Image (tube, rainbow, N blue to C red; front, side):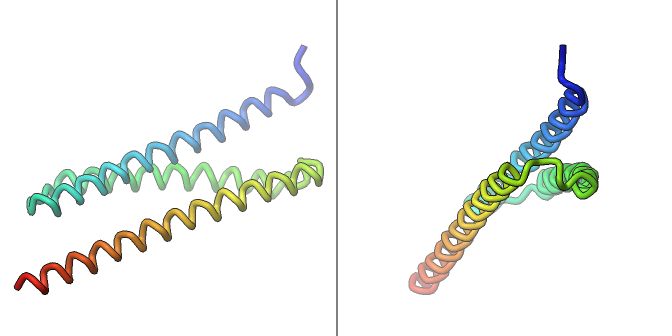
Length: 128
């Protein structure tokens, strides 16, 4: 026999899984777009239709995630004291650490991209 409320917990887990799927799909589409842009830069060619399709897919996934996250946030605000305090603190610390790690990764990637652009500009300047 299942615990009371376990059906609603299963539904919540399914909703969270759907958000994860949208995030994964967005990241896949965004990675495809970045790869296409990188390939275009390397070859000098450009496929604007492909870029537009990839951007549209990214936008759709962000829009879907946004709607689902708004619903989840509203439910969390209504039930913000659902976790015992010690679990709430632990979950917050884990999420904050994940967010900080992602931000560091993004900042590192941006710095690498800027360094690559500066190196490319320097190479072009010295060869002309």
